[in-house]
Length: 117
Image (cartoon, rainbow, N blue to C red; front, side, top):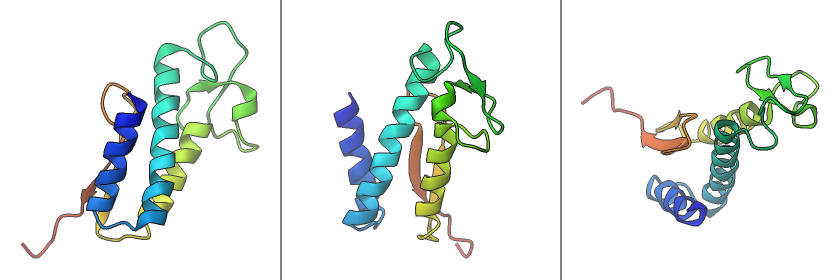
């Protein structure tokens, strides 16, 4: 499942005009975000399942083990989203759609609509 989604996202990134370096970087972030969203949904490590000690993110308020929080109280999932947004910011004609539901795509790329059409 992960390999199919990873390859599909990589092809989508290339189709949107990203070169090999940026496509792979964004694909790695997508896979990490997908894994964390699934862990959050299932209650797997490093997310909250009611049985382990967790801290809550200052931004999204999801619970994660303290080792996955930074010194500002931001969880790994939010940091991955920030890094993905920074990558896409290098390409002004692309939009990054972020969704936390692991049943579909947690991140997807699309073209920014042309305001002159």
